[in-house]
Amino acid sequence: MGAVRATEVTEGKTAKSRKGNFFYKSLDVVMEIAKQTNSAEAVFAYFVLSKGKQKKGKASTAGAPKIAEGLGVSPDKARRLLALLESISWGDGPLERVIVTPAVWNENSEEKYDEMTYDKKNRKNWPNKILPPKGENYLFLANSFIDGSDSGRSIAPITKIMDLPKYQQLDTLMLLIKLYHKHQLSDFGGVDPKMLCRTWDVENRIDLEYHGKAYNERYSRFFATATRNKAFTISQDIIDGMFNGDRKRLQTALNNIRELNIIYEVAVVVSDDPLKSDDFEVLYPLRVYDNYLEKREFEAETGMGGLATTASTAIRESGLANELFGTEKVYQFGGNGDLHVFAAPHDKAQVVSVFRLRHLASTEVNGSSYAKEQVRTTRMKEELEQLKFHEERNTDDCELEDGEFIF
Image 1: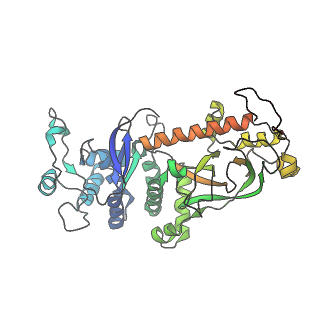
Image 2: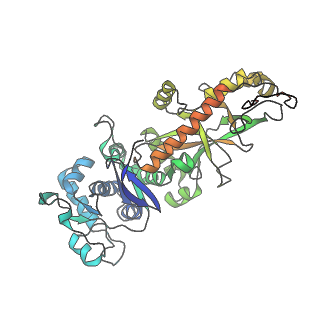
Image 3: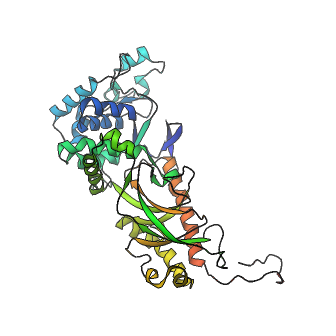
């Protein structure tokens, strides 16, 4: 990721935009709109207005024409959606509304709005509406969430969801919003696994030190096999809070998100079980379940497509695979199956599948998280490729020149 600019704040964290390619919105206002309208179209209309916000402040230049363009609806329908948003409030205060005029804002807020700071030459570009926030939670999305990507060659999620049966649209959208809000590459490698993940069964855990083998203690002391489970694990809060315990509705929304190609799975090696411990670290990706990304990263030889094949090759070439895992399992490692071998410095290390969303905002936080993951992955890849197992030598009687080390 390159240098980034334009600072906004979300939950105490700084988010910086590169070339203004994302927009942000008040999450609590989004929830309020969904609750009061029961309409995905109304939420999407608010997204369009949020995308039209000026860089300074909360003012928006977007209106019914932009809503019609973004949602693919008639001008008349767009005007009705805008009027619906203007009617929504969550309290009696003059600023406790989805949309207020600049005059109302200036009269009731310490943060004054000066229309002349936007475009002194063209009055048509002056914003005519303010979008007050509710609470301190913000949701950041790439502009491609509304516009599509690659100059229109990729269909935008807003269009995909609008094409679903109407009774499925809001469930799918609100679950997606919840996943975006809990998506943190730096901490989780994707969506918080306590919210949504796929577990793996780990067995045949071995300690190379116990077997008298040399290892790089930073990464590869422990090897183990892991088998991918078929079922997802999802938090009870989502099941009860968003879907009132209706698992069928939840499954339909999950299926929609997956089939619309908005989400993909990444098996990551973690230092501890994320469902049982809050003190865990994502170490590196073991496998990326996305054909395009997997192929691209394989050709780039970065390892970002996952190190499942690299790890299985290393353990095979070590001469320990048959001894430690058994001949039958050795031939199942890697490939397209659900059995993999992984290396880690921790005896509690696990594999868990997290889920990553497309159309993420190119913020500084996301950019640095990708860079951090690439550094860890490259280091692990080099470690596995260079790893040569041998019986440890007795170095007590070795005479070493200055600067020489046994490895």
